[in-house]
Length: 305
Image (spheres, rainbow, N blue to C red):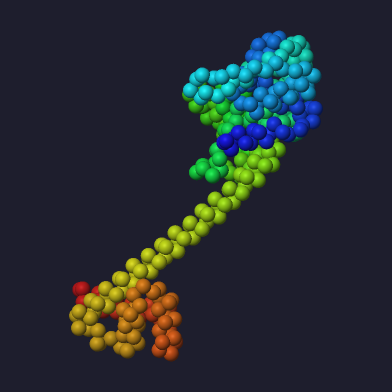
C-alpha cells in the first residue's frame, strides 16, 4: 500500500466539527460530483467513497446509494459510484456550489476561517493530492486540477499557511506542488494527519543524518587523498635530491625530517611532527616540518634549473 493511500486512510478517520465537515465535503464534491438534482460521484478510491458517504450523511442527513463495479481498464481497480438526490437550493446554501460547474471557486463562507480552510484542504488532498514516500529520492507533494482558476485558488489557500506552494501547467492540466520537506511536514500538520507526519519526520531525520554522515565521510576521504598526494610529492622531491648526490649536504635537522618523511609516507605533517617529537625527543611542530621540507623543495628546484 502506498504512502499516499495510508495517508488518505488516516484522514478519513478525522472527526471534524459541523462546519469543518461542510468545508471538506464542498472540496470533495467540487471536484468529483456530476449531475444537477441527482448527484453522482465516481471514484477509484475506497477512502474517498467512504468519506463522501459519511459526510453526506452528516451534512444532509441522507444516505448515498453505493455501487461497486470492476474496472476493466489497465488499472483493473474497483470503481465506486455514489448517488443521492438533493434540492438545488439545499446544495447551494450548504456547500456554496453551482451544480453545473466543476472545480469552481467556493463561496467565501466555505473557507471563512483557518479551521475551515484546513478542512477544505483535507478534502482537496483526498480527491486531487498525492505525496511521494519520503524514503524515495525527492520529497514531492502535488495536486492536479483541470481548471486554472481553481488551481490558483488552491495555491493561495496553501500559501495562506506559508507552505511556499508553486504551480505549473502540465499538458492540459495544472499542478500545484510543494518540494520542501519542512513545508510538506507543515502541510501534514495543517490537514491533521498526525500519523503520516510522524512517519514522514522519522524518515526525513534519518535521511538528513545519513546525508550528513556521507558528507563527513566524503570530506574525510578527500582529506586522506590530499594528504597522500602531498606526501608522495614530498617523497619524489627527496628522491630527486638523493639522485643528484646532494642529500648529504642537507643539515642534520632537515635530513631528519626527510628521513622520517620516507619512513612514514602516508602520514600528515601534523602526525609526522608528533612521531618525530616522540621518537627523537626533539620537539618539532607541524610548521617546523613544513619549512624543512620546503628547504628540500628549493634545492630540487635548483637542480631542475
